[in-house]
Image (cartoon, rainbow, N blue to C red; front, side, top):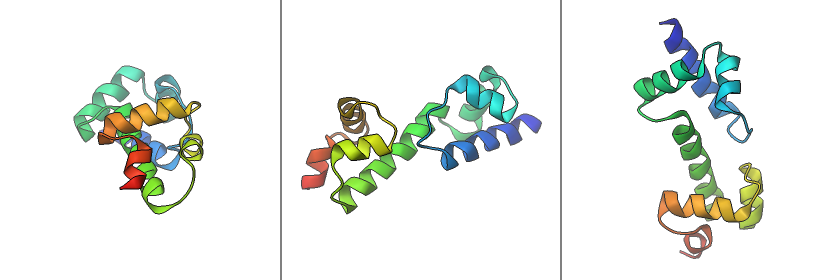
Length: 106
């Protein structure tokens, strides 16, 4: 039960700080557990990995911004914490099956 509360605390932290860059070790320490318990517990409780969940949040935000604003793709990448626009575009295409510019055109 205590570990489940820590897993939920990790999820809450991710949601609140989704654009902050943090390692799994730092997140584990923040919620008071170790990396193994966090990874295993997160997968058991939420059915996805820590970074899979984190990436899902970022990609859904990216899609929303791209479809509902005129902010440049580079600025979207920066907002989401990507240091390189190409890395963002690659991750976006992998997640949605099309690059961000193509999605914006549609």
